[in-house]
Amino acid sequence: MHDALPPATPPAASDGNAWERMHRWVGGGVARGHDQALVGHRIDWLRALPFIALHLGCLAVFWVGVSPVAVLVAVALYALRMFAITAFYHRYFSHRAFRTSRAVQGIFAAIGASCVQRGPLWWAAHHRHHHRHADTEHDPHSPARRGFLWSHVGWFLTDEAFATDHRRVQDLVRFRELRWLDRYDTAVPVLLAVALYALGELLQHLAPGLGTSGPQMLVWGFFISTVVLFHATVTINSLAHRFGRRRFATGDDSRNNLWMALLTFGEGWHNNHHFYPGSARQGFRWYEVDLTWYVLRVMQSLGLVWDLRPVPAWVMDKAVRR
Ligand SMILES: [Zn+2]
Ligand SMILES: [Zn+2]
Image (tube, rainbow, N blue to C red; front, side):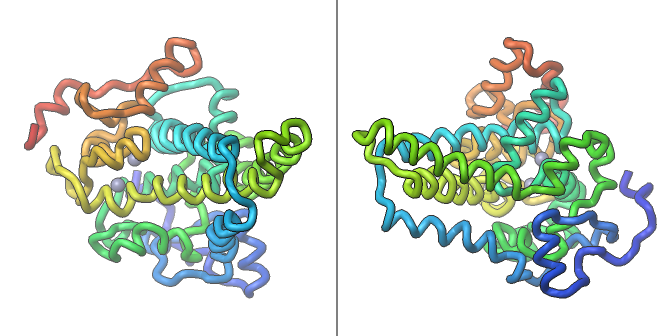
């Protein structure tokens, strides 16, 4: 598949003036570069502004205060959206590890889009690229090559990383709703923020005893929940290629790490995953906690997803550490 890619042309995303670059932030753009062109080396601070603002928004907590209901909403949105990222952005869109209906696919693509980790096509294209080139010079986020901070967040903010290489996701681009979520990847996050503000205002009006407000619900439900979710997700790019045990002799530095598996609902079994990315579960042993897998099993029993791809028996025979 790699060798069959069209010939290289200069990357489309690195030109243009400041306004054009800012405008493209809304939609990302389509990469037409060769593999090396997807690896950025310089943060585009202008296009990084909304991402920085997302973090600064958390500081408003000192003005809006806290209430149990606001924290509850923040935690619930973390859980729902982490599941959307791990089960759908990762295992379904990136690896096709199970099947589902177009409606369920669309719903979880939209929930995934609310995570401010760009659209489903962008996410899957970059992740497939990571698997193909993990910890080589073509990997945009290898801690071994560029250090912790770069692999954690720096790469995400380069001009090169904004674009989506559609050649990597030809099986997904035929769905117009997915293309729309990718093109307007700020739409769902903005909608979520507005809805949370409205919810807080409504609760303040209807149930003042809860002690919440529009601004408070916005800060906890959107800013804090989203920032924690983002950093938890990208620990898999940074920490899970550094700390943990290696069961399989993969050609990369991926590790299995229980703490990251708990934080990310199962993604911490990253060495398992790099060895056999096609299975719907990433904890290969019964004791390897994989919350995403358990929920997918429940969804399967309800008929919402099906054909969950198992871990073949030969895989465990290849383990060098049991
Ligand atoms: Zn990896
Ligand atoms: Zn993967």
